[in-house]
Image 1 (cartoon, rainbow over the protein chains, first blue to last red):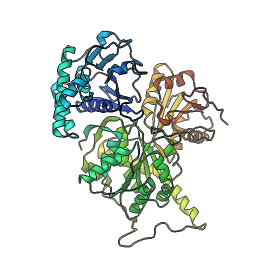
Image 2: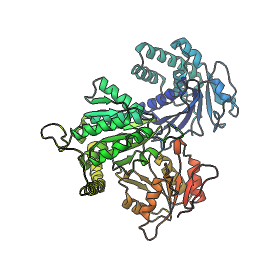
Image 3: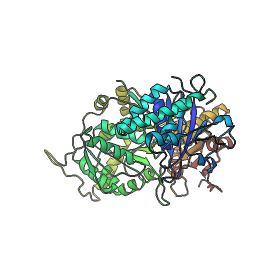
Image 4: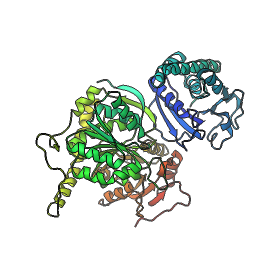
Length: 198
Length: 392
């Protein structure tokens, strides 16, 4: 499949799984034949502390390193991060923002039509029994912005998670991801968000 | 040979390389950011995927000491560490090289205390640069994997210990595509090890590490220097063999692009080579003839290759991720200057110290460096009120 160059910055808090989501997305892209690089930015390693992670995607090898300064997609695993210092740095009117929130959220400097919300904590709470939003947000970004084929991506994800999680938890995570995909399908026209990327 | 393409972090790739190397002995102590190498490899051992004697030890000093003992007995040995861990190994580093033991050590480059910091720079391995170890610095996760395999080949032929350095977090914790070779291909490349001659135990035991007094110590040290001088040749043969077995071209000591007509050449070590090469290409687009040089093997120092690559430039900008605190700048800059001194028309060298303790090197900073024009001396990049020293 074809990949459009895309730089994604994930913001979360320690324990929300932002780093895992960033790495899994890159792994998925590589699995589906693209090029990707993912890296965490390690601040203080404490549960609850703000953390960032990056995923770069390209049709050819990624030849940049370090932080994503000008994200094409900004993923906020906690809506309260909108007002945290540095979170919106480099966001422009070309940036898409996805926020884990049950209701619409205003993101200063970003046009409302480029801000999308998804109740990732709610979905995770119902399926996993724990409000860890990363897999839901991962699935949303993978399908809506990267354009991975939903069915094949969900199958890959379940298999991948089963390598590290008990079978039941892998299945429940895959279910959370499936619900995320259902939520984001209405965002799409023709397979992916065509305005994303450069 | 068909390679398998997967996404791996630097640490995962090194652990996988170890599994394929099938070392007889691994003695290691985990430390950030090298922890997952040891963690994952010990899982391979526990799950029976590799038949290695894994020695969990209580410190890095003990880790390398156990490696020295095992290598002297003829075992193929690998280990990993970072930062303070390498500092604690320091005493034994010299024992490993002085005894000519082919130990491979993956270092996840990390800043040294104090102040304490877990992020990447080259202070740790630069502190070991005169310890008689070959040092190679990886550019990417693929390169860290490839070079770990190559290091075993080189160590066993040079009869020298080899460090394969990968930048902490930038490579150790970053996930990238890696082409993983089949186990049989790695086995065919490396053979079984160990080498003849390392027989501390067994058939005809030898004495290892006896006293060498003034009548012979200097000859041993000269022999060590001579062994180091032979490394580039062995490396060249190693990368030829590597290509034969795996179909991949690895630069052996230096990688250069656009230096033939460069007015300004950038020199770098490690994973920021990508950013620096891109900066040189952007400068070309702006009409500035910029060249890119990556020092792949820092020990032995590739002086002749650097004279060839940099001799035609007017300005050389060295990007150094460590400081000698000598007033002369970083270790790479000092040695590049020393290498170029022999040239009649030597370029001016600006030494730019960057990225200490994991500080990011930003594209805009590289562009500004080239656009504003280098001015010689030593620059601490991004530090307010920069300390600029005139060359002595």
